[in-house]
Figure 1 (cartoon, helix red, strand yellow):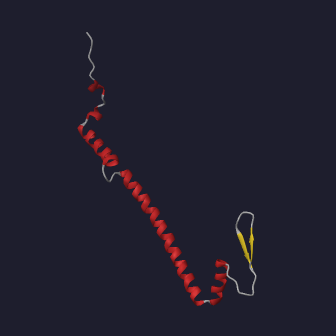
Figure 2 (figure 1 turned 30 degrees about the horizontal axis):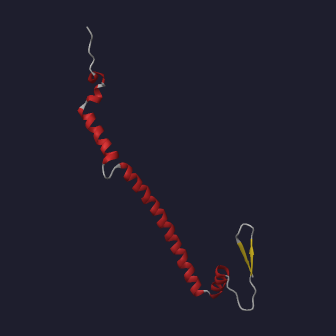
Figure 3 (figure 1 turned 90 degrees about the horizontal axis):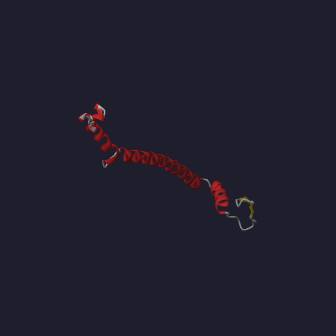
Length: 110
């Protein structure tokens, strides 16, 4: 006589427990299937961190630019220096020499 082994009996008892199955389904639902699943939340948190760093960077740049504008408005020597260096401006009686380095950058000499 052959003993018939049921597949149900081969499953460990904790996997047959209805509470374990319910918790397992809930965890799968929360991690993968829900509209606010954990994967989506992780991506959103990462994006938020990136945007906060970006915000700090731009706030720092705005602060620097405000200082630069204030200095350009109040200091005529700095304004002249800025115009000469940034926009290669010169006076009528001056010659401007631009030296190009082999790597493509340029030196600005008066």
